[in-house]
Amino acid sequence: MKIQPEEKIVLLGASRGLGLATKFLLEQRPEKLNLYSFSRKLNGTDFSRRDRWDEYAKTFLALEADRFIYFAGGGPYGDYEKSEWKDQEWALNVSFAFPAFLLHSLLQFNKKKERARPFQMTFIGSAIAEGKPDPKASMYCAAKHALRGLITSIQKEESSMDLRLFSPGYMDTSMLPLNSWPRQKGLARKVENVAEELVNFMTQPGPNLISVAMD
Image (cartoon, rainbow, N blue to C red; front, side):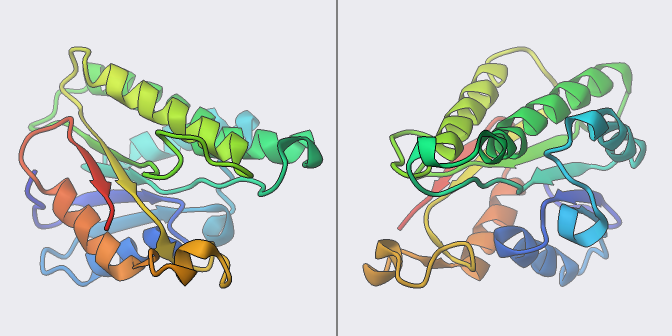
C-alpha cells in the first residue's frame, strides 16, 4: 500500500520510543503527509480510560484517515502479585483492551463507509512477549499474546480492511533499562532503524501481513 501525497495518518501513543521515531521519519517524507498524533503526554488522550473510549474512537474516525498506527503499550515490571491491580489493569487496557475496542470500531465503520481503498491499521506487537513467556512482565506479555491472537484471527475473516501486525524485538529506547541484559548482549537495535522497517512494512503490497523485526 504505497504512501500517497497528502495522506492522513493517525499515530496513537507516539510520544516516545518507536512511535516518536516513526513520526519523525514520516514528517521527512516528500509526500507532505497529514499526521495526527494522540497520546496521554501530548494531548491528554489516555487509552487506559474506559469511560472515554467511545469519545476517542469517534474522534479518530471523524478524521477519515488512510492509516492508523497503534504504538501504546507497557506495564509494571516485577512479580505479578507485588504490583497493585490498578497497575496491571492499566497494562491490560492500554496494551490490549483499547486496541481491541478501536479495531472493532474501525471494522464497523469500514463496512458502512465506501472508500476508494481500505483503511490500513497497523498494531505494534512484540517479538519477545507475544509468543513466549516474559517473566516479570506477565500482564504485558498476556496482552501481547491476546493482541496477536485477535489480529491473526480477524485476518482469517472476510474483511476489506488492511490489518497488520509489526512485532519488533528489543530496541534502544528509554523504556529499556541501561543495565538490562539485552543492552549488555548488544540485542537492543537502534529505534531509527526499526522505524524505517515499520514504514517499509506498511508500504508493502497486500493486506494482512505480519512482520517480526529481529536481529
